[in-house]
Image 1 (cartoon, rainbow, N blue to C red):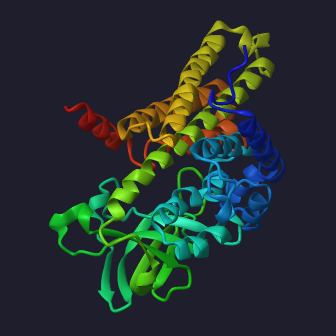
Image 2 (cartoon, rainbow, N blue to C red):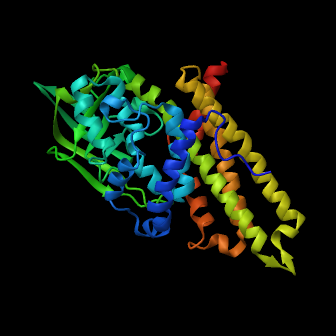
Image 3 (cartoon, rainbow, N blue to C red):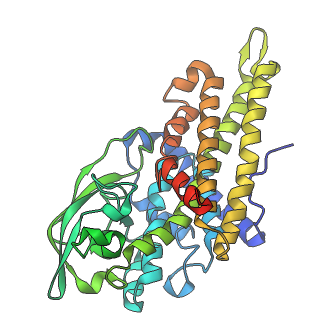
Length: 387
């Protein structure tokens, strides 16, 4: 029995989309994935190519240049880009708009949507989301980047860190504190769209990471940066709740990447075990190897089912934040286990940078941290359960 490589919700429309993304990923990403990872970047032109292939806009309204799909379509893209492109970092940066544009879509005015969303979906501009700060990670309500009203502008001061696509982004959705009263915490947060060439806004440095090397990850700084009030998304003080709502989809998309990474590591391990010989027979001829592969498969299948089910329910407004947190933790635990076992099964080659599973193992380490740490997910679950 071959492991399932699709989600239970997939219709023929989803199947067509998966084939579409597969063609793009196999032709435009996979042949270059190792080189781009070593170079710590990929060509900007890839965004236009992805747009032309129908990859970027699947979950956005047709009137804004999208294909009119929902979260389930986005999940298929996240899965297929990683699996067939054989690169988590490239897929992550290519999809950074998936965590930033929804905030414009949900909070923005008609003018803001028409200004910012279509150019990104055409691959002409790159969008990023900036929430985390050097002194405020998981505790979003404690962020300190300030935005002080000055007539028709806000004066923004502060910094952000770990921002995917931060160096290249043409527009960044930035969480700021518009009310200096710290006792208000989440009620004082607002979202602003800050464009690349705004005076006082710079990508201060590109960050070196354990994994996701081809992904552009930056620290941003704002020094007396004047941002038009017209760039505010929603009302002052509405930012925190929009961010929390946005996290649900982001966490499920990350969980889908976990499934794709684990599936890829498993498939690489099966192929290696069937061809690598030791003591006169292939590795798959040893019971210990077969059982290791069986354990890997047993972890992957139920998580794919869980993530797919929750994506379908979240798209219908039927899934809770606690359920999403459970799915994220389960998916990241599974992915970490499978990738570790894949490296072990490959032996010395599993420790070499020329081997795909080595890269996947490094890349997997981000998943229990990104989009809310494992510990924060447990706190969400604990609060929902009342203990």
